[in-house]
Amino acid sequence: MKRYLIFLLLLPGLVRAAAAPEARYDRLAESWTLQADGSLEYRCTKQLTLFTHTAMNSTYGESFIVYNPACQELIIHDSHTRQKDGTIIRTPENALVEVLPAAAADAPAYNGLKEMVVVHTGLELGATIFLDYSIITRAEARPTIDVCRFLLQSSPVKEYRLTFSAPEGTTVRSELLALSGKPSVSRKGGMEQVNYLFRNLPAASREPEVSAAAGDVPLLTAVTAPSAADALQPLSAVFTTPDESVKALASRLTEGCDNDWSKVRALSDYVGTHIARSPLSLEAAGYHVRPVAEVIATAYGTDAERTLLLYDLLTAAGLPAQPLAAYSVPSQEVGLSAIATLLVETSAAGRTLRLAPGRAGDAAAGYYCLRDLKKGEVQELNPEPRSFLYEAALKLSDSKVESRMQITCEGASLPYVGDTVSLLLPGTDGEVKESSGTRVTCSGTRTLNRESLDGGYSLLTLPVPGCGFLHTAYDSYNSVRHSNLLLPYLPDETLDYLVELPAGTVCCTPEGEKRIENTVGRLVSSVKKSDGQVTVSRTLKLKKRLITPADYAAFRALMVEWNDTGSRTLLLQGEEE
Image 1 (cartoon, one colour):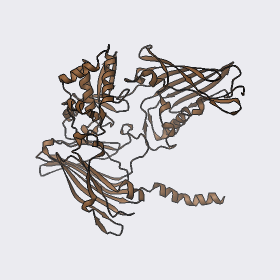
Image 2 (cartoon, rainbow, N blue to C red):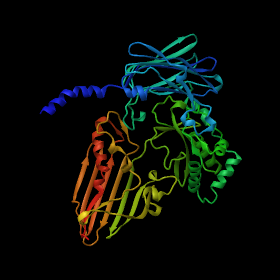
Image 3 (cartoon, rainbow, N blue to C red):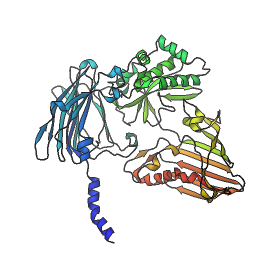
Image 4 (cartoon, helix red, strand yellow):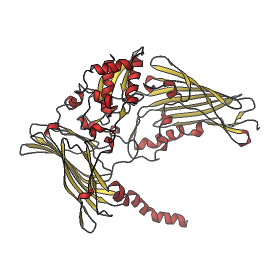
């Protein structure tokens, strides 16, 4: 009783400690000013108070500012720390360190980029960091206001102001999602200013798979491009007719390919394996895409550059190719900054394929929508439910387990590159054949082992396919969730097993059926035994892609049971040697 009393007395303090933030933005202000001379000034002012040693020594001990000296100028207006007693510590010159951005380290073409590391000095608990800087992009770089901002920061924000200014006659189109608020618009000195002000914003969620597409992540976009097609023009302009050298390379790579499908695989495999990936983002590269000839000669490229190379190779090989911009945000007023990645759409063997170098399957999976890079037209992405039937026949002998597996699934589950059988049925050798409609059947064989235990007992873990929700981590997420979770698709998965036991061996796993049915979906798992045989059947079917916090407990109950290894492990007993 005494222990429970102590716990209750300590509980309020524990709750307060858990709820306290590491730091707090007392003020955060960002502004974008498009001048009449064509230059653009981005200015950021932040005032951040530190509450924990983690915030002081790790999370906020430094600020990082990436810019391109070839077309931009960085100005540090102010940088200092106000300690708890009011003492002002100015940031010394040797605490402003310029380095090469890590993402550009293995990309010599982008070694001109700079990252200013501002090392904040005089830090202590209760100290407040002040930083005020501008990045001015010169007119020759043809800058525009092109912003996509997630409004929640890693710590709470008391006041957050975002301002967009442009010469009168240039419209700033903005859109606010998942948060209420309207901008104030003013005109002065030939400039039009759009201003947003937010107060008391909470810290961003640290839960896994939080996304704007799930509908609960505050987001603000602002662009001066007249339309989506106009915004995409700088990128669409680089997707042109391939030159003769690319045509010669495409011809060599597809030599011996007897159909379009094999050509797509050969070209995609070349870009994915022979052209190294530079992790530099589109925005960090200034939306610059190097010519294909340079990418081939240097054997590396950003995601956009490798996509351009794949597009050129497909076109040179006589295959249809359409460049696409993929977005993870549901905003309609978007520019280049909202693009998550670039893809290429082609077709082969009657199937539409959306490719990205290094991706084995459908590269559009997981994004909110696509836009034709040249026309700006939107392709909505609403993935169809994916179903498969996995069947495994296992025959046990005294020393080994011979198994034959088969999976029947839709084409959406099939990889574009790599060996289909080994990816869907790991560890097997087999064949692929077309089934009814768009479904495909793969089959193969594999030898398994049993885990020997004392007393003549052994454990047999039933095999699983290489796709499906058994390969997700949803069962390991926290038991409580406060933000929406958007699933990549709705699964309808069935795993059937037939186990033949040798003479003298019995299955000690009890017969029975476990059924979970709730607002999110249904799971059924059963074990049946007959003379010398055991049949195990497991089925998972979900009916909601958007899992809200209210639905999360039901969803997690299904995931924990579906991923439970014990539910597909049989305890066997034979004659003890």
